[in-house]
Length: 52
Image (cartoon, rainbow, N blue to C red; front, side, top):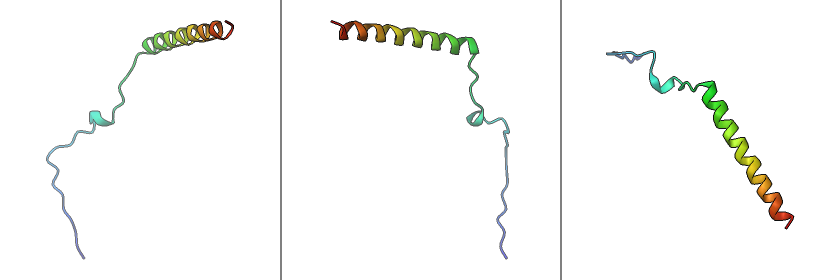
């Protein structure tokens, strides 16, 4: 039988690669509100262009 032995020199259980970035709920809400306002403005512009 065979075996492979590993020597671990360092271990970081809190590797930032696997920790999602925290985004404040207020920032997300503001971005979504801005997006929704832009969508409404574009839809109104499109409706105005379609109606002549």
